[in-house]
Image (tube, rainbow, N blue to C red):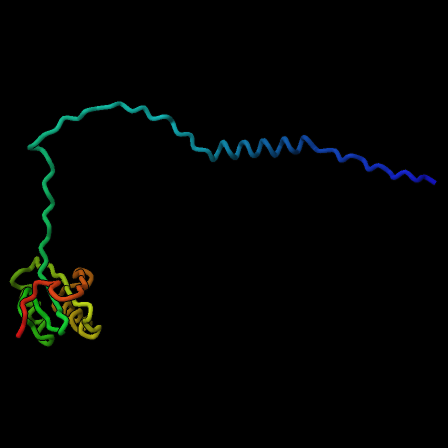
Length: 148
């Protein structure tokens, strides 16, 4: 009877297949690596000119379409009823075809009134996306004349 345990044979590591894997990894890293060339920088002092500078961009002036906390509507600081807003917008657009508007609404303005104003803008030919809205909070946030 043989009481000594049998030694297991040491597994052979296949070096050839490991070399293949290493070559594939090397090719992968070379192919995916971006080599940044060192950019040579030369310090240059550019001449300046006072008369050839850029012109300042012209800021567009927008007329205010304002809604107060009491849900009163003002078109360019003139009070307007919601039922006559579309007609007033059309008349203003006929006087000034290149007119741009800005909606200034109080934060307590109801959604229903905003929808009516947007409908009036559409009827007057002003795309709603071309009229930026500014939500204002608190009193004195706009320069709308006080009403009695």
